[in-house]
Image 1: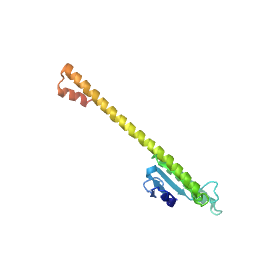
Image 2: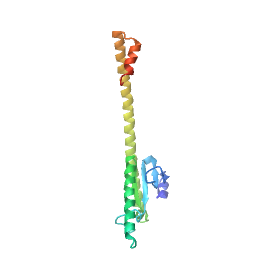
Image 3: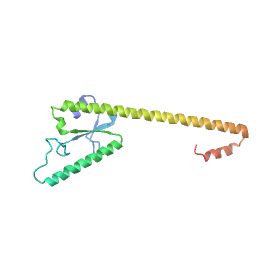
Image 4: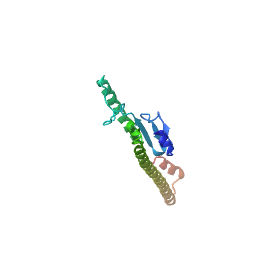
Length: 168
């Protein structure tokens, strides 16, 4: 998977320990992480590669259940940190379906990049709005101060004290 992504021009980091679940592939530019899960170890339902061993059944069922729970918690934590999460199964890496898997990953990366860019654009516009609003409030305050000075000739010391206590 890494070789295919690199060959298509994607740049990434691997096994980032600072993120929940230590994702296998991290694409910061796309705000996306990719987990490559083994069908047996992570319990890929409906897959021929996931069968419960005939010996020590209880142990294996419990182990796979805990792995699935941990995976779900890690996905939730990553999504709460605004990361897109893609899970690729071992069986999707087989040569027969690999091109479809790559196409699916590229489509999700494009969608995640679009979401991330829209989010950043909104943050930029919100910041610009906040700056403009701050400038407007400052102009209004200066205007009020000037009018008060003209009408009442309030000493500067008293005016400063009034603004020190205000929430403006």
